[in-house]
Image (spheres, rainbow, N blue to C red):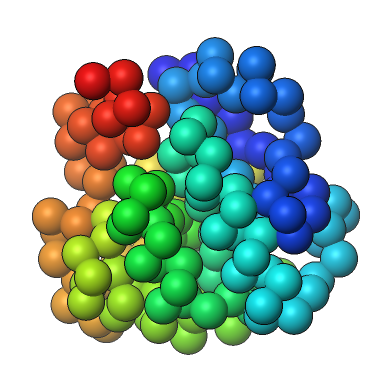
Length: 172
């Protein structure tokens, strides 16, 4: 699959990749990062995510668990369900050695809403070294904490992931 993680550049959902390039991707993960965006209020951050997921080529919201970017998880989860956007549960975020804030609590809160509304998630390692690829110890811990159903995890198989990507739904 050909894809990219793109930055959400402002709270109007502007991305740092042109629409023309986004259209060429199989998978697009849109994320908020502090070098690109100053943390804002819960209303601003929620608006930024909701605007980003309106883009038909954004398949996944990356690590929405970072407490530096507070979000209304119920609104995010409902909008993700409505648009077919996947929400990432990020192993690197959940690491006790990570730099993101309140990630375990935020992931659990988000997963509870995903379970309630039937919104799919995708598991990500955010591996920055090859030894971490495919390793999800912290993700599995939070999934177990909320008894999260496997059927709502989009990337348990390649076929399931492909069927869950918004882009593929839009092309049918």
